[in-house]
Length: 168
Image 1: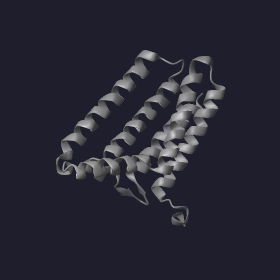
Image 2: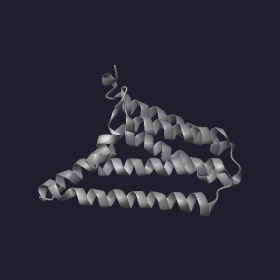
Image 3: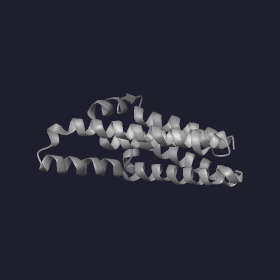
């Protein structure tokens, strides 16, 4: 049945997860005090972008384009050190953002900090997935029932965001 809609269980899990977290963040922004409104609005936008990313699959397009260029230049077989460097850089950037937002910026409520930390972790996951290091892909794309592990990670992250938003 899902093929009729050009989707699969993992993609459906992501679409539903991020649709719900986008709505939850929007509702939290409407119910928030002044200090949190901006954070919840930003989270609404980012989670909405996650939804559209899964819908259109831009990360796969970027990955395929980069591979095409690497193959054309004869660099494809030497790509692993590039991918590992990018993954380490992305992880470091994500960690810096988490530390800066969670400990220095201090939005008015802990709920917004928790939701932001989860959102930053999900941004890092999308970035790592875009880089597509085969060792990491073999873990992220392991099936757990009908849904790949990456879909379950999206769902758990989205659940945490929704839980934080509900506390608002």
